[in-house]
Length: 191
Length: 254
Image 1 (cartoon, one colour):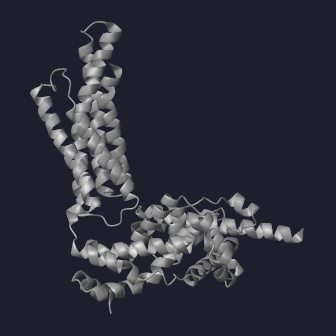
Image 2: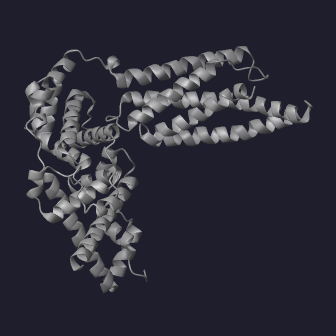
Image 3: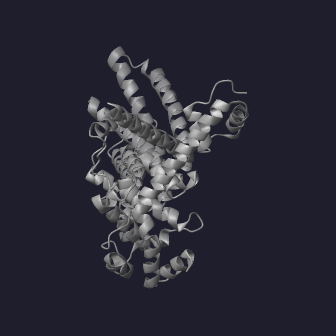
């Protein structure tokens, strides 16, 4: 069933439509929050909160202004920021990461998930956790969800030029971190 | 025609399509003639694709646990829909109460200033403008904090913004009177004569008025363009807290 039909039906009070909307967006919302927060527990809390908020405040969603997904992502980003602020997740600096041999255990997926991942994906994931929340939001929205700059600006509540420069800066930092790690690993191997 | 090689910033901008047409044209022309930059660009593009793919793979691999399910939120939805009332929503109630309090005190302050002829003579402005400024500043700080986690742009945002702007314009006028009186007090304290106080006060008012008009008109344009965004609330907070400081300055000096 089309998303707009489901939204109309939920607005009219059909609870089955709410459940269908929930299931349509459950995984994507979780993954976005997971990318921003770095751990399953917080991501589930943010995603669950965002989905229930969106469903509760469905009357505030204006489909002439944006897509439901964009609106939901905006709520998810906002909820993730709240959790980051509330729990004051420790900032992880590049120098400490390199010193510890990039075992950023606090932020990485669980052990059973981690073993199945490729090494290079792990590197990107770890490097992602070093970025500031603003930059992380921008690069995830651009590359993972394929948002336009206009949508990123709308979701992260900033001007479009800022969204553009955040994506660019995030990419440059990620590339720099990965190059530094590659260089250090090569140096260690040749020792 | 660009004569130097493209730097990493330009290459990233090119890949991410964040350059304007003119910059892109210059870069295209340079790339046609420069094999080194073409190689660099191809490397950067490959790097970007790899990062993008790794990022997608890392996130698409993650799945929520079974605990994250619809049943966990269903009771909240049912209860809320049964007794939902917009005016009991905290995100509506708090800013509305604060700006209304600020607005009422501003009207009382205006009435007091007119009845005391404070615009033409040096009379105390009373407590109402300070209270008004306090509540409006509180509303703007609350909105500024909330805007960091606010999801939808509510219709109420326009109302709150309008009252904050009108309030800051009105309090700005009263601030001019305070600055005028302070200038007179300062001249009398330094010079001991009333004769020079008049021209000094006029100069202070003119300078203040220029600043005031700039802030109010420039502020209006900024708030209109950025309505509901954190920057707008932050500007309101700074303006109103500054205005509050000027209003309480005479009490601090005495």
